[in-house]
Length: 408
Image 1: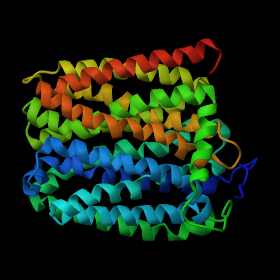
Image 2 (image 1 turned 180 degrees about the vertical axis):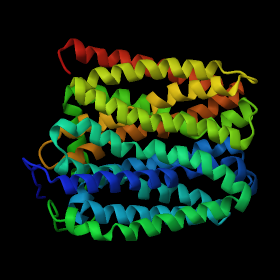
Image 3 (image 1 turned 120 degrees about the vertical axis):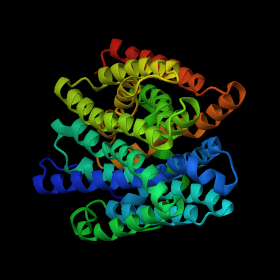
Image 4 (image 1 turned 135 degrees about the vertical axis):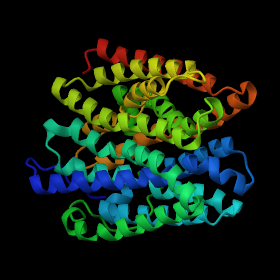
């Protein structure tokens, strides 16, 4: 494997193009990656399953994404990060079409395909950004790119329920597939800009050793080890918001489908703003670990507030809780990824980010199934939100140990 160290100086044009294009890709891939959770109230009856069973679908997507994300770093070196992104979007389009078929078997298969398509994209984008981003803007840049995640959630929550009522859920899934393909083709002019440095020859799929080696290196770092464990619970809280807010709104708070989608949009729009804000604040203070402690504490409070929500609460209060919870539980990721990339060996940021994604995806693999079990036993969405509030609060406390050791 050959690697390329980050350049001492950066090209402003390459930097701006990368940030804008990769943020747009992140927005679209997020919409595709989480389409089942938003379509569940409409699609589940047609597929002959309960809407809450989307928890199993989500767990499968993230389980497959663990392998795909860890393989993404070596594959980005082999193919080039833009080519890998094009492949990921194309695979995601196939998944959306499988879901749009309306066949329960193909719908289940689409969860596996979605994980394969979406998993490697963060590693690919990190490989580019680590080369073109000025060091002083690292947290802000990764946070801006990651703001495409909540922006995708927000647009999907606002537009998909309305589109489903106008055109049907299958047409919406097929339309997202088409947009993925068009975007993959539109990225072709970027290949000469970003797919030259760091390219390697050899086998396409990485060996087991190539996947495990960066995970071992990341785990050996005492700071990253503790951050990865905290990230597992932070991402589980994020998965709770993204995948259960609409269902909680419809079945728990007795909102209509469109109103529940708007509640998700408030949470995710706040997450978009939060990612940029927290990233800028981490750069300004040069205290990214302290930012993660604050984020964990606030998302714990927001989780308890969401658990306390009652039928009949005014919309402004529900939206306010969603903003607080979304602004933190969906806003932490850019600071975390930037810290992982910063601690990577030269030229291996994509591999390191892919390796630490093992923990980021592990939370959404395990938690939705547990959430479904809690829901089955208690018939309460609030219980799941409260449990995650406790977990994220404890995770924030664990990071304070790093601060006491003098880490920043």
